[in-house]
Length: 305
Length: 225
Ligand SMILES: Nc1ncnc2c1ncn2[C@@H]1O[C@H](COP(=O)(O)OP(=O)(O)O)[C@@H](O)[C@H]1O
Ligand SMILES: [Mg+2]
Image (cartoon, rainbow over all chains, first blue to last red; front, top):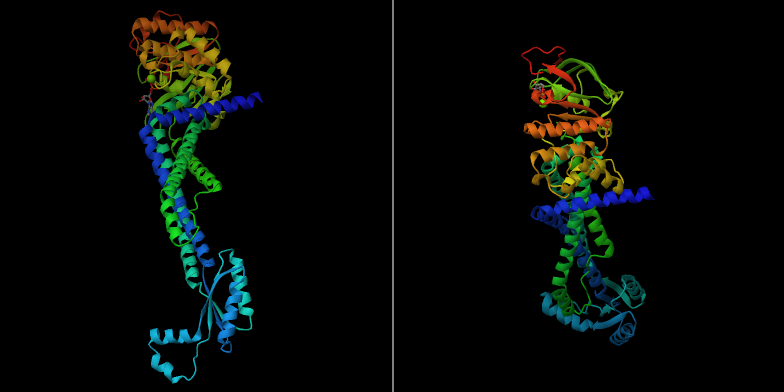
């Protein structure tokens, strides 16, 4: 027990020492921390944006309308009844009946095939119902589509989700891009911290020499530099998390009013507790790694002379 | 305490600094290592502290063959030796106390024991009241005494010093040497390199004379021994 507390208190002392020395050169330390914060905030920020777009695209899909084309045999009266019945369902918010006569008139007016249609003796278009599902889980929407498809009067259910799919694949691409950016920027953090530690080693060459002369092991000499790298990474992570938080709160108000315009309760999704912990943790680990590499490469060069 | 057996040292980029040195220093002895500049005094001390390795021959320190000490054990080995440098090698951004405490911190001494030993060492060199000062605020003589306090703080059996009075005037130099004598009286073995012959003439200790990398037993009139 005693040994453990002694060990811990020694480490706390060294930790405090590493921090204290970083504060000795506030400008240089701030520069390093900002660069690390930017490198960490970029991928995290992009990830948050992609996440938001995915949540948003999810909410769009549930708001998508179906078009239910009825059999040619269904007459006006039955179509109207069917529309009312469907609209009465819990999972449906609105049903609009597109009458085959109106549809033909529209088609004639807008398609430019008016004369071609004159050749036909009968209206080739069926009645159609435009069904707007209630916003809800995506599973319900698929179930609703299946049920509508199973009705005798139904010829075809068309779910116009192609554009959502397209958006999805674009988002998937964006996610890949963010993953690659994350790897590259993580490397950048390691390099930046490694370089800072290298400069620090050079600055304290004299001290390192003396410590080695009075019996300091390589591990002893290395430790404060590892702590320094850890602290830089952690501090960069904290600044990155704060930056993302501030950025999100700046755009959250306009985003909400935009969502209200579209009649959507959509809210911006920020960093979760786990994501914040991950951000800080990876900052610290990357800082540590940078210090490990820098000390391995530069410390042994300083031999006592 | 120290035994050299036909030790040679050739630096990679240079001539031979030691060419066949044999001598031994008994436990509790105090000896001056003399000789003109370039004779190999610093090199000899570096071999004792394992700052350099001999090219040939055997260096024994405290009955231990230093060639058997692997690199990673060198720090541990050095903790048993006190080293005093001509330029004292104090850390200017730490207090006098922290400078003297450094070897004890490295040896992870208990806090109370560490404080006790640092104060005792500072007391022995007469600088107890300066423990909170920066080394920069002290005179050169005082700085050298802090360096000595650091070397003896961990109570080593052996202390080596390379020109510890090189930067000091005669009076301060004598003062430093008398300090070493006091440590010798309580059993510390000392090997002190110096070329200040006037100074060591005033003190009655064994001399080990080096010239051109060799131990000279009967110094010629024209050498500096
Ligand atoms: N690191 C080194 N590399 C090459 N030659 C050295 C080195 N250190 C010392 N020498 C040479 O070794 C010889 C002995 O030097 P040194 O031991 O410093 O003598 P002293 O301390 O007696 O003046 C000198 O010729 C010096 O130039
Ligand atoms: Mg010398």
